[in-house]
Image (cartoon, helix red, strand yellow):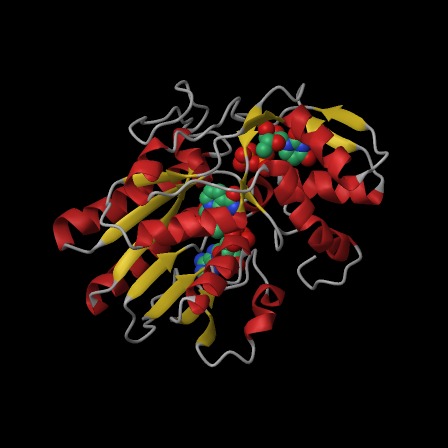
Length: 315
Ligand code: NAD
Ligand code: UDP
């Protein structure tokens, strides 16, 4: 297939691109490099089945004949989407509209990268796909949460009214090599701080939880979903849940760092708990994550060591 990956120069999008190329497909990556970077796709420079188009997907564009669109373009880390609030809302709405319109025009299948943020600060735990969420519609995080919720609604509308063959993946906190060192996410912050011997900044008392999925597990789940006939949203994440304080201790253990922990104020609307219920993905796709947090952090260590030395352009 010839496949369009929007946001393909980003963290998850670049790993997805690698996996699609490995399956024998051709990939056109459309990215405006707002939060991604060329370094993430530099290894594909001589790959004849890979094309890069520097493109803001909020502007109308025609990629030519494509058979599948993976729409991953969007700032994703809280630091990034708070800095680029309007751009985040534009890419979730106008960008998604443009990509769905291209899918309709070319008869292409479409997969939306959605997020566990659709559940907001969840009152149901763990989160099943049937849960509608608990989102502050005007809070700081709303630029991301509501644009993704709108993107999901728009995707379902194109499926229902215009018969576009769509999928929606709700991605839970994913980490691994190519995570931007300065994007402010907890794993990149902790790894950077630990390797530099700086204090690890735990926000609040560190009792809030997250469930971390290694990027190759995440991509395997996304590709399995893309091949299924499921049109409703599907959680893809690792259900092993950690408090942020536990996460800090595991990073210290993995890196062998002597760093101390420093507590800082909790940002507003920071979700207290996050854990995917992946029963549906297991039954539907036969998929489950294989890499636990300690193993995944060890597998990411070399990347973070290079990144803090500034030897990757993204850093
Ligand atoms: P990322 O910031 O590394 O990648 C996003 C990419 O989209 C970047 O390369 C950026 O330049 C590009 N982009 C942003 N706006 C664009 C626009 N208007 N036109 C073209 N390109 C644009 O983030 P990521 O972690 O790789 O996230 C990828 C997708 O997965 C996002 O849609 C995000 O919401 C979703 N997601 C990620 C996570 C996670 O833990 N990484 C969790 C939930 C959802
Ligand atoms: N966090 C933290 N220290 C940091 C960065 C993040 O304690 O240096 C916390 C943050 O408050 C949140 C969790 O770690 O509770 C996950 O944050 P992240 O930005 O990675 O993603 P989120 O799941 O909040 O979108």
